[in-house]
Length: 194
Image (cartoon, rainbow, N blue to C red):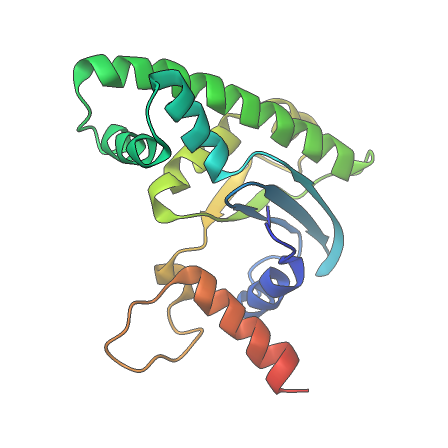
């Protein structure tokens, strides 16, 4: 999934890795989740749906009657296992419902991309590290597409700084941020080298 019109940027990065020729690239950004399908190293199609990271935040804020900032804090505490029992119980129900809604749109998008051809089983996901497990587990729990349309069971690869190590050069000391690394590769490849 790729958000905010970044399919070309992500394909530039993934070309650097040269691990697979067939894959999905994915980013669940603020408001939108984009999915781009690449087959035989060619970007075939992209599709998006309006449920990104903020969808989760708004859902938790609405379900717990709190602010967006409080919702983000509660999601973080919940993810780390530090939420109060009462809050954790409510969050479990809320997150399962949000996961279900997001997964429905994800499945619908995969079906629209496939056009009766097999779909790649490798999915690169770009998301903030704190929600990587949520989206990875959600994608892996998807049953229909991965067993009827995909070449094999989904393999979800989180585009982390560890995976990106060595792809870009940094001056020390600096925080390595995956989205900036990917954008830097794109700029270097398509804007500076031309």
